[in-house]
Image (spheres, rainbow, N blue to C red):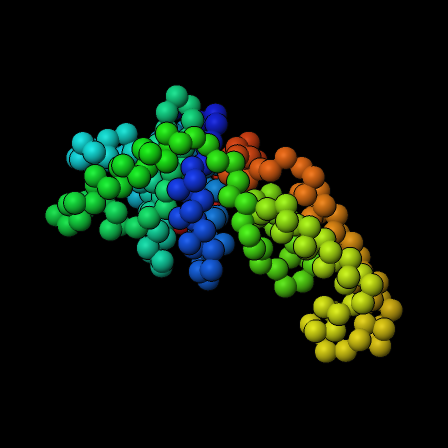
Length: 228
């Protein structure tokens, strides 16, 4: 079965993903979504037994749902149209009828999803925050391409200040960087430099979320043992 060739993300997808950013399992949820996207590049067939299209409710016809987490209860809602995978919304099992429950949820959920898709593709959410505790966290950070330019500018300034003062090093290690070993100081400033380069590259690159990197996600999924 042929796979998708394009991925879009709705404003509703980013909104509902944003509600999960503070959860301790957020990284796992991102991994699960990326894995599904990568597998859909090879085939639109269900990736597992929890990935299926709605068939019994007319309101939800054409919409797929995949349970990607039990804690928290998270279900990914999406559509596949003409080779395009539309990541529409993250919700829960309460957002659709199941086993005689939540019968009234179908109309609302379908309406939200169709309206979000109709509003068009939103490439990135322009997050207003980015979680990091040390410079190395920023290298390869999957949200670097998703935060606002203002956030990246602030981080660049913080890294420049760190290169001058070593204040973050002192907070993390409990002593002044000049009082430590030369090798540790050298390694730390190399870490700061690498982080600065990563942030600046993201700052001046075209905004892009990892979910649009279809080929990279497909290659990763083919060799991954990930099981949501």
